[in-house]
Length: 204
Image 1 (tube, rainbow, N blue to C red):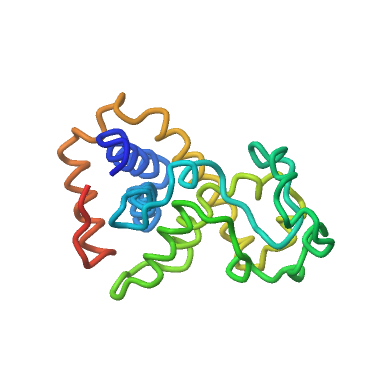
Image 2: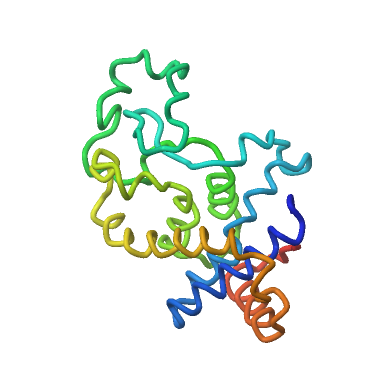
């Protein structure tokens, strides 16, 4: 993985955080463990995306950009800014359409969600895939017009998403400092998660 041990440790650390906050929520633990694997998209064998395309937040396209997105001031050069329909709050979508119908900016989380959705034999439910896809969709929590895109099913999963985003953010800053990756029992637990939910071996 890019960033080597730091990226690996972030997965173990994030999983440990999720376990402490939701001890019985094994699907969330799995999502926390693998959430950073989308960074593989920068490697030549997995797409060769430039580094700048693998960092930052994700957000909907086809509707008005939120000013809460980091560095949104640079969207002035985006050609969508010159299309009237894309500058309306809901853009080309209808209220309550659901995030599954919304196109998102490309990034590691969108890449990982696509891979896991297409991978035969995964045992991931819709909420787990929702958490993985929207892990970096931070402006959803603060932007009203993005909230209007949510379906009833999305809204029911929103609190879980806020918690999951908290875990991923804290894990990114704590990776390599708290020893989660060296805890033998935790590593064994993580291996069990992979065997339960993902039939194909994953390499760290």
